[in-house]
Length: 125
Image (cartoon, rainbow, N blue to C red; front, top):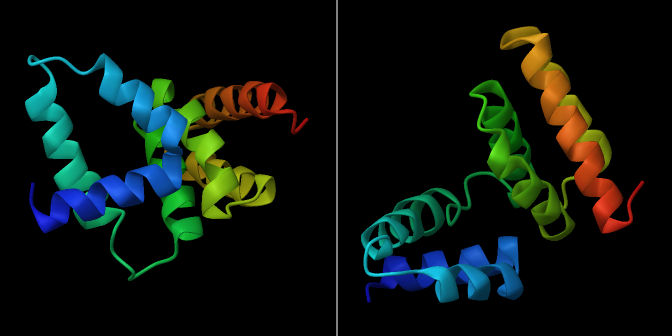
């Protein structure tokens, strides 16, 4: 594997946790292996591995973008990751308020609902 791939896997584990990454690796097949390599190299090994902004800020941006584009299925994973990125509940609600203004209240409302459910599952009511 490349240095970028190794760095991406390290960052992925740091942000999402070993349990999540181990489950994803166990579920990987020959069919989706090329896709997994792509996201490890590009998303985790390039974007998330950059030190240009903090993990806290990157976490907030990611949650806002997921909500703004309606990619709600990824929100719980990234809410759980805030425990490792340093993004607080206050940071998350601020990000979703930006979504409400710039991308639409229904998307922000749904993202907030998902975040509340995820925080409750985490014991962070």
